[in-house]
Length: 244
Ligand code: BTN
Image 1 (cartoon, protein in one colour):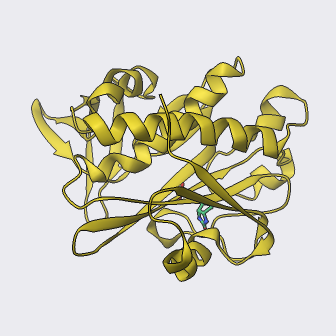
Image 2 (cartoon, helix red, strand yellow):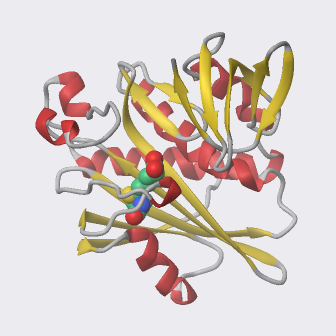
């Protein structure tokens, strides 16, 4: 099968690949994936506007592409990228878990996060799908992050090539996006659920407004979290979970 072509824009240093891609998207091809990556960021941003530590030796990339406005399950796009990266790790004999919705964990510590921003136009949407991967970050640098964090280097004791990992991710994502465009989240559901951390465990979930406590039950067919609260099932569309 032919997958979407990827155009690479490679920078040495930038505030944020996310902001750079948004500023320049009007010049990017609408029928391709444009991947803006950089060696370092001086103003990296994470979900909920948190800062994203972005020193050299790691991967910072934003994938820009367009989709029809009526595409299925647009809100689960970040989860597709999360799964693509988890697959790359599995192919490298690592055993990732996914902390719903978008964090990739190794050894229960976060090594990657994704951020999806979508702008709506008349007939299509512009998607800015960012991923930050801690590749060669040292233990000391990981310790500067406010939540338990790790890197491929910390976990394996060896240096990794950022270029090779990014290339493998691009290939996997181009494949996954093709399937997603055709069928939505459905074909990814069981793979994602099987990799999910904390299933059956007590967690808290902050949805941006309110914090819920319950049992992390399962994933619904669109990628949302089924949280069991005092015997009742609540669907959480997006949020931040923590195990107790
Ligand atoms: C998260 O909070 O887990 C998401 C982190 C996303 C970070 C990436 S790094 C590349 C892109 N540029 C940014 O400024 N943020 C995203």
